[in-house]
Length: 318
Image (cartoon, rainbow, N blue to C red; front, side, top):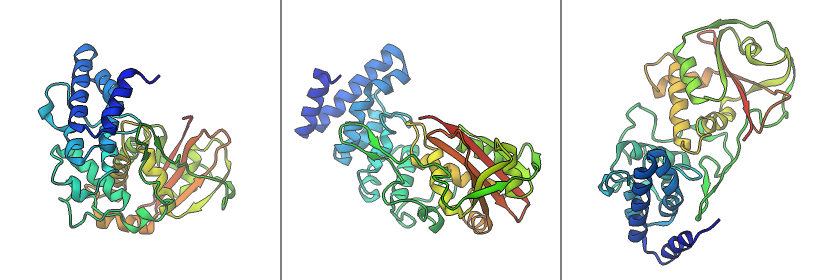
């Protein structure tokens, strides 16, 4: 239900009275935090925060994250409505506009990677990423996406449109596959742990052997509809898998995928050269499950150089 206060806030926005709206946001968030704690405060103020992040001039919008607002009044990384407030802000302005204004390092990093996902090349216009993740999309990162779907499409008054990317998206190009006996499952692999952090709603297994032997560990049947596909076509689903929670943005998914690929390559971090070499030799296998929910991911990432394959499989209703 739209309240009188909602209408009043929207009227202020229509009149461009953004400093007043920022002050109202800070009062509302701080008061809610004082009453019921940080999580409640973030939730209570989120619709107004979305309005400011979406439509305010960047000089005002970035101040959602400035600590000069006082205790309880500052938006954090997890503050979200349909998506995190920092991601809403990042979809509205170029890095050229935002870079001189954003102060908090963690917010600044996520905003920069969101701009990279949108298509900006920040390899010469931003500080290097602390983990070494490139500040420009690699060709294999960009190839598999439809136009304009890498980041949620936010709406002015709240809410967002975003594609539900699943893998496999259809059975086109797939066929009957009789899976072999499962390969030997390995425990304690760092890459397995990092992949599980990326896709925390799915099961992950590392197997010594080719992709079908890894799939056999997690598939519900020995006879599946499946097949191989280029890794670039799996990237969107993997990145989106790391951003299913509205408190997390697509930049979280990109950073987590680079960490996982670095670990699979045996590097200390997301080393660009090592990751690109891995992607060039990687083999990817996908399959369908009869009971798949609206979001599902069934994928094996096989590195023939080391003889290991990582299977990821999960399904959930939205």
